[in-house]
Length: 364
Image (cartoon, rainbow, N blue to C red):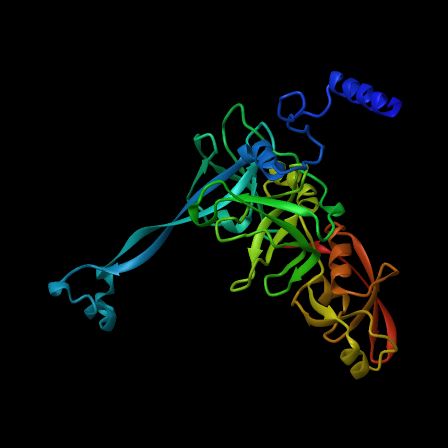
């Protein structure tokens, strides 16, 4: 009996001081920035918090083509066989439309998206979730990372917080918002399937893989964590696959945002080689003691590497005395340098080790 009384007193005190949100008859308030979203409405809360900063990007590219003047009763094929009549062709401009996604990153109206979404655009229209539309202007782009910044002139803009993609782990929940196939403000959810993925055919490295549904038109849109922060920019899918999409880690993007806004481009260092990792087969062929290092598959003409004396089939073992085991490690180290920096390569060639020195150039 005494235990029951104490339980009643404790429960009454808990309810008196607030208790759970449902006990007070009011729904839980939306978490502030930095808090995790949990519960049955977690994804809806994320969309409510960050979705207003996601924009639809409509692009027009004017394609110029030559078409024959309609003469001789419409027999236009005649001009294809009589070059002398080519002056009767005239130039026509055909507008080509495209669509993508993006997200606002500050109150000044800067929008992040993919460079391939706006490449060659002659006109850009930005549509917000609240119905407002603005003309967009590209103020910076970087084809190497596939990132561009668009500027719109507007006030009272919602914007997203950029998170920390370095801390992502496979299995974490993520949310994608975008404009797939023109279906504005589409929300999909999934998990991080893997990190540090490479798409060698597209020349893209260190990507986030996700099974959140991503389709054409999602490009440039945000991949959000459970805090409602952007951890990636959706960039690619595997055609014909089921739920295999990729995003650029936001950590890579944050490093260049200020440079893009200030100068419109990113100054990148360049060595000038194509390379691949040394596997066991390559190691056996060249008589290497271990399957480590990177083999040079091609040296670009007039590149810093060629001027240093790097040759095809050289094995790069180290840069500046830092031992390297993969092409990704070399790319990462070069990317952290600046044009004009001196590099020292430790090369394995014809069963002997040699040292080559030179300076990096600016990638054009």
